[in-house]
Length: 104
Image (tube, rainbow, N blue to C red; front, side):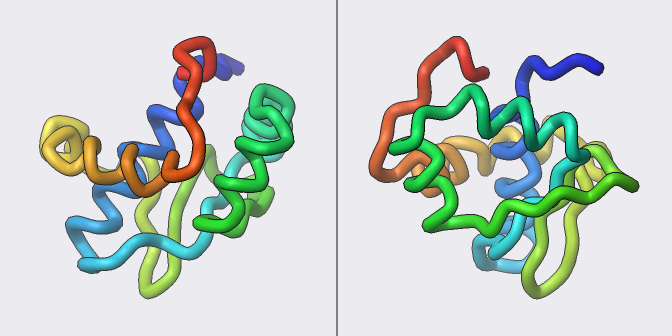
């Protein structure tokens, strides 16, 4: 499995969720290996900051989805459209820490 770009995928999914539902998601569900990779790439401070925004869950039947009022599956939307909302998603996701380029 390609683990590169885990946070970018999360940014896109959160951005599209915000566009569709008008609010930020409450949960992020990852394929277990992807979640394992993400949690081992973040420092303890970064992980604590991230989980103040999103409840992280393992979900073996999908790569990545975010939810709350509804669900947005990564790959189930036009990335070009989500790109317009990505800066706001980055600001929201990473409030309290600066994401390192090696994590993207």
